[in-house]
Structure formats: C-alpha cells, structure tokens
Length: 121
Image (tube, rainbow, N blue to C red):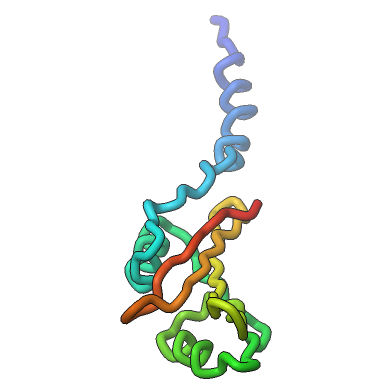
C-alpha cells in the first residue's frame, strides 16, 4: 500500500501562511465636501476606521473653545485647529493597513462641515 505524502506536505506548508495573507486596504467611505462632520464621522467609523487618540495637547492658541467643543463631543481624533484663516480643524483615523485618513473640518453656516479629506500611507 502506497500513501502519497504530497497532500500532507502541501497542507503543512500552506496552512501557516493563510493567516499572514495581506489584508485588503481600508476603503474610504463616500464623503462629500460640506456634509456635517458628525455624519461623515459616523460613515468613517462604520467603514472600519479607528479614531486616533491624540496623546498631545491640541493647539489651543486662539481656538480653545473649538478644540474643547470637539473634545467635549468625544471626538478624540481631533489633532489640531488653525488659529487663523478659515480655522480648519484636522481629525485623523487609522486604517487596517496603517494608513491615516485625515479630514479637515471648517465652520459651516450652522454646523461644522467637511472641507477635504485624504489618505496618508
């Protein structure tokens, strides 16, 4: 009786690599310029992005009420707010492949709205 060891060897060689297959890059949800940040944030979280937890004190020079507003809402992903110009604030989320989704938010007529977004590798 002959037993083929090829299937056994193939299984032993293949199985350890199954868990190391590269994960698919994180997809960016369908954000739109001018949409409320709260709505965009929910789309980002639903797409599997993780909010950053800023360990440094955000820039509060001239923008303390703005930064405090977002921190008070539990938006730990706030990185910084500009103290001049449009007063844009930067928020960051992390993807499953180490990417960073950066979102800049400005003051709309009644609420904070998405200005632009991009992925940093």
